Length: 560
Figure 1 (cartoon, rainbow, N blue to C red):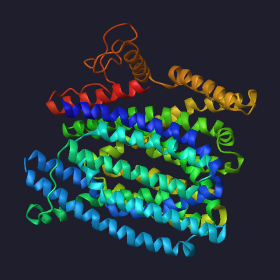
Figure 2: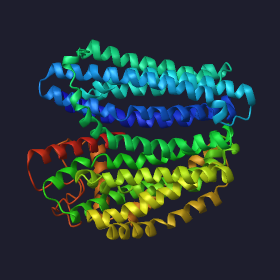
Figure 3: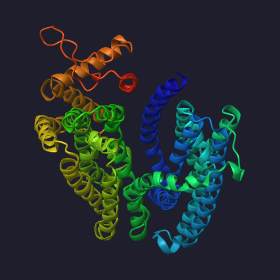
Figure 4: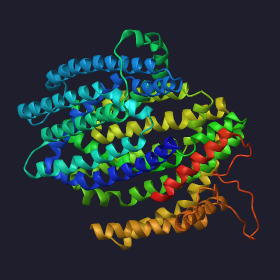
C-alpha cells in the first residue's frame, strides 16, 4: 500500500516537476540570455555539451543497481544486497577518477578543439567552465549509487520533491548573481554547489532514513554477476549513446567549426524543441502495463494495431496543436522571448519537431517491441541514425551553420525513426501500419483547415506584444478544441474527453474504472471499448495493470 502511494505521488510530482521546469525555463531563460549575452551563454553550453559526453561512463549501471538491489531484497538476502551496494560504490568511485583524468585532458586541449571568438579571455573562461563541470560530474558519479538505492526503495515522492526544489532553487540563487554582474563561470559554480547539496541529501536520506547497510567486504560481493549486469546494461548504454549523439553533438560540432554564438542560437532552438517533445509523451507512459498485459494474455497484433491507432490519434491531436501553434506563432514568441538575434532558432525547432511527430505518435508500437523482446533492432537502428546524424551534421555546420545541423537531425529522424522502423513494425512484428497511417492521414486532412484559421488570426491581429500573442494563442487553442471535438474526434474520443471532464468536475472515485462511453446516443448502456476499458480476462495481473492505468489517468486529470 505504501509502495502504491509512493508511486502515485511520484507520478504526480513528476508532472509537477516537468511543468515547473518548463515554466521556470521560459521565464528564466530571457533574463539569463540578456544578462550573459550570446557569447557567455554559448560558452556555457559549449562546456556543458563537452562534459556531458563523459556521462556515458555511467554505462547504464544505475538501472542495474535498482534491478539487482530490488531482487536481492525480495529474496531476503541482506548481506548480498549490502555487498552489491559496496561493489557499485567502488565501481562508481573508479569511474569518477576516470572522469577527472579525461576531463582534465579535455580542459587542457579545449583551446585546440573549440573555436572561441573572444580569444585568450574566452578560452580561459571555457577551461574554467569545463573544469567546474568535470568536478561536478565526478562528485555526482561518486554518489550515484545513493540515488539508485533511493529509487530501488521506490521513494519516488522524495526523489521528485528533491528534483523540484533543485529546479526552482537554481534560478532563485542565480538571478541575484546575474544582477551583480557574474557570468557563465558563476552559473557553473552554482550548479556544482546545488547538485552536491542534492547528492548530500540523498546520502543522508539513505543512511538516516532508510538505514541501508553497505558492505565493502569482498565476501559479500558477488563479482560473478558482472557479466549478467553488462548484458542488462548494454542496450541502456546504447540508448544513452543515441541520446547524447542526437542532443549534444550539434553543439560540439558548432563549437569546433563556428564558435560560441552559433552554439547559443542552436541551444535555444533545441530548448524550444524540448518543450514541444514533452507533452505527447505524457499520454504514452500510461499504457505500457496494458500492452504487456494484453500480449501476455494472448492479444494479437490486430489488437495491438487497434490500440496503436487509438493512442496514436490522441497523441496526434496534441502533436498537431503544438506543432501548428508553434509554426503559426513561434516567430513572434521568439522575438518577444529572447530577441530577434535568435530568430533562426524558430526554424531549428521546426526542423527538429516536425519529423519527430512520427516517433512521438507511435509509442504503442515501440512498447510492443519491448513486450515481445524484439527491441534490439530498434536500438541498433537508432545508433545508426545517430551516427548518420553526426556524419552529415559536420559538413552542414560548416556550410549552413546551426540550421544545417538541425535539418540533418530532422532528416535522419525521418528516414530511420520514420520510414525504416515502420517497415520493421509491418514486416517483422505484424502490426497493421498501413491502416495506422491511413487513419492518421485522414485525421490530418480534417485538422488541416485549422492552419488556415491560424493564418487568418495572425492577419487580423498583426500587433506584436505579449498581450496580443497570448490572445492569439488562446483564440487558436479554443478554436482547435471545439473544431477537433466536433469534426476531428470519433465517438470514442469524444466520450474520453467528456469522461475526463466529468471525472475532474465531479471527482469520480477510483472505482469508476472507465466512465467513458457509458451510454450511447440513445441513452442506452453501451459496451465500453475505450482505451481505458478493462480487459475481459480477470486475472490479478491484469487487474493491477488496470488499477495502475486508472491511477495515472487520475493523476493526469488532476494536472489538467
